[in-house]
Image (cartoon, rainbow, N blue to C red; front, side, top):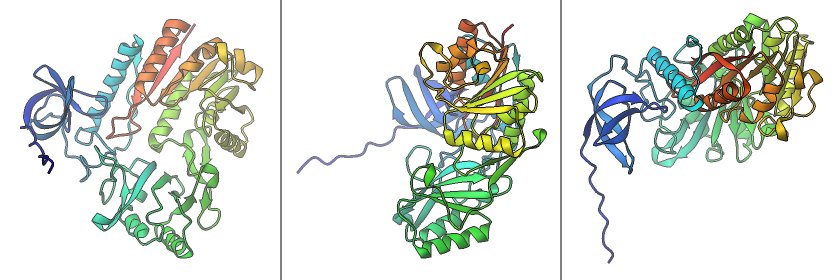
Amino acid sequence: MGRRRTRSAPAAPIELAVDALAHDGRGIGRVEGKTAFIHNALPGERVRYQRWRKRRDYDEGDALEVLQPSPDRVTPPCAHFGVCGGCALQHLAPAAQREAKAAGLLENLQRIGGVQPARVLPPLAGPALGYRRKARLAVKDVPAKGRVLVGFRERRAPYVADCQRCEVLHPQVGALLLPLSALIGGLGIRTQLPQIEVAVADNATALVLRVLAPPSASDRAQLAAFAETHGLQIFLQHGGPESLEPLTGPPPPLAYELPDFDLEMHFTPTQFTQINHEINRQMVQQAIDLLAPAPDWRVLDLFCGIGNFTLPLARHAGRVHGIEGAAELVSQAEYNGRRHGIDNVSFSVADLYTPPAGGAAPADLPAWARTGVDGVLLDPPRSGAEAILPWLARTGPRRIVYVSCHPATLARDAGRLVGEHGYRLAAAGIMDMFPHTAHVESMALFERD
């Protein structure tokens, strides 16, 4: 017989002082000269924690007991906090979350880019709960629990968290986790439905069900009844975006409003839109205030999506050209422009991740967009905009507004714009697009004489 393996007993809890907050929301302390990352621990606290991972250079663990709480500690508003991985900071007061994110942005700008803004913008803030209008929810049939689970993944595991409701999702969806569980549990394709994509507009709520097998007539009838009961649009998707199929015929288009610019933006459930509509409205206004385009300005909007910034800019500038890599989004942006009769805007499909060699402009741009630009707004993905900075600088904009979803790549690109292309970082600040998470959205203004 082989030797029976015995599971070692967990190490004894450890006491430590928490000195800082990591970028992912964990507390940071030192034990015997080694860094420890502790879930549910805040700066200024003394905690007793259980170590669950030991590395050569650092440890990881969970706070079991808070011996000396931070004055910024609050009771998490969600009963599932700590199990569900959707949120990391519900135990920290929202104002303190924003302060930590703002400090992290400035630290990244200095450490990575070697720059600091001349002015720190006040954080943009909105509702801390019920704000999330876009999400991808995992779905899993779990026989051991006797039901289908619907929600986000667990904090430290790939399993779907067993949650009854979600406090950060828009209430139209956040209260439906258990009803959705019951619905899917009664379908013939309950094991063939791995994900639900949520899109809450100002005028409707859509659920996109990713299906690996076609639903039966009975399944469709149950889904249609659920949609009618809860006032939902339901779509089926068995492949890429082109496979999107409304369950019961074409519904009215989804839309959100930008009232300060007299705009109603139409979009499809799978197209990218900002998840927090209140912050989006503030963000668009702040971006245009910072760029301050004159009526005769020519402006580029890079990574323009469906025209979220492009069309508001066109209300102020002489000419605006939006560039986006996805043809589907460009078509939607053009449609939104036509709906409002905006004739000083144009769009191009171009790959902004790998532009032509030598810093050349992307193909098929208007002549003025190659060399004669007064202002630029860009909203790149997490990877940033490093590849297009040489061309961007050569177009000659006097102001650049950079909207970022990742402080590290913003800091890297800021260092390039300042150190290599003659710009100064005039202002920067955060936008609390994702309260209770460690995600940081920010905006920066670059100027050149």
